[in-house]
Length: 394
Ligand code: SF4
Ligand code: SF4
Image 1 (cartoon, helix red, strand yellow):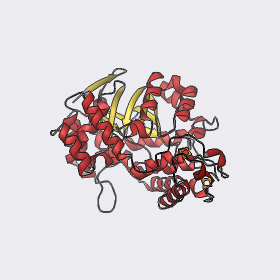
Image 2 (cartoon, helix red, strand yellow; image 1 turned 45 degrees about the vertical axis):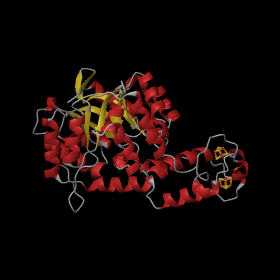
Image 3 (cartoon, helix red, strand yellow; image 1 turned 30 degrees about the horizontal axis):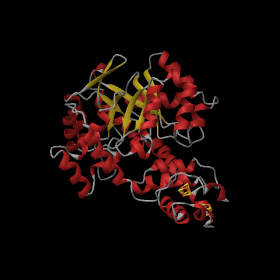
Image 4 (tube, helix red, strand yellow; image 1 turned 90 degrees about the vertical axis):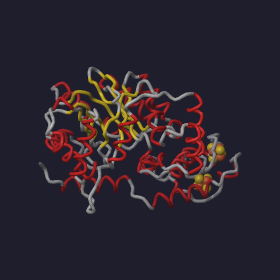
């Protein structure tokens, strides 16, 4: 297993993300199977486990607590997160934090994150009424948190604002990084921003929720031609292994096959060559070439009576065509009411201005229709909170 030292901790570079654990037919976590996976990970030297309040309706914390209590407390690093991104009426941190410690059956967390600082949750995290950061800074002083950080799917200005306010207290940041989002979601700029603020980088979604190990045969053939011995997962992990300020890469492994494969990738570091990177970049371009190729000239923007940020919607639409994820809905929810794709009145003013001749009204309509088939972030939050309330406490 490859390790990296972070502030005195010898971290396995592969961490176990506990969001996609195996489940039974009823949807409950399959504890026996999860135990096998965790034990195998520990045997192979994986020593970092990452859970969160909403994972598996609050049960991920309980299950990992039940498994890890059988191991010496100093033989693993446990990470958990404060759910300030969930839409609800009360963000008082103390009851949640105490509940998390109890569920995980520990006295302290090695790593603790403010979960998903985004345009939707920034105000909550900054609001003095809740005192969230002050509370966690105090918990760190008391030794109940060893390292404090945050995760984010937010935009660069949001991350900057949060770092300006609290950067001096933060040690690490968890970002969505993979070879497609490096450009599609500006992960490169986010990575540079975070490291320039002196924080360690944690990687989430290195295979984009599995999307990057389901390439079409032509894309896969391009990678196989370059390295017949590499799996699609090899390419994903080798891409993030390269980044010098990445200390931790999380993978939400559901099956033993995934676990065995990922552990074996993390037994060696084989740098990508320039030619390898060029092939990966070409596959990334191929994967995101669907949809409008907006150049962000903004000629259309002043013409929109609804004040829709059209180039931003175009960018998100390409992301949505690549793979629909809840974070897209979250970003749309963060836009001003009345200026979202569903608010488009199909006047066509924008298209007359577009030098790329893009059918902007169609994009707005299609975007709204696709989003309407998924749950809003407010609905997801409500369901997660309800599920957490039903959890049987240890
Ligand atoms: S068609 Fe829609 S996006 Fe375009 S200008 Fe009219 S309201 Fe705005
Ligand atoms: S005018 Fe066309 S290319 Fe320019 S920002 Fe608007 S949609 Fe994009």
